[in-house]
Image 1 (cartoon, helix red, strand yellow):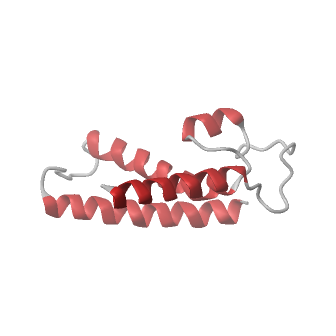
Image 2 (cartoon, helix red, strand yellow; image 1 turned 90 degrees about the vertical axis):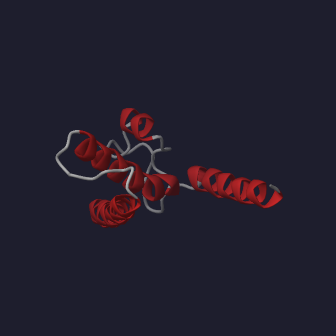
Image 3 (tube, helix red, strand yellow; image 1 turned 135 degrees about the vertical axis):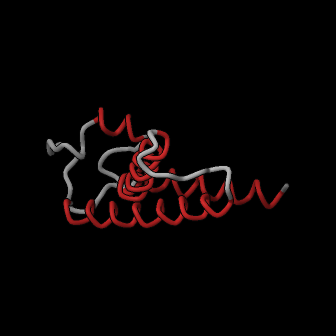
Length: 106
């Protein structure tokens, strides 16, 4: 139990540090779609910080995959361990792709 508490505390601390560290070369007053407070609240991020670059691709990939799976556009049974592994691999791949696209956009 102590180990789990330690790793949880560490993850929260890193996230909080990332959410107060502004992106280099980016003015918080610059109007942009990516810096919109509405988009930030939907995606659960602090706009214009390192947390935005770290969290956004994972959240967006998860939302898109869940929509595709639950609308039966992708045939994945999340009860089956093999399909769960495929879903997780696709989630990671999609998050990397979105991360690269976001880095290019910035």
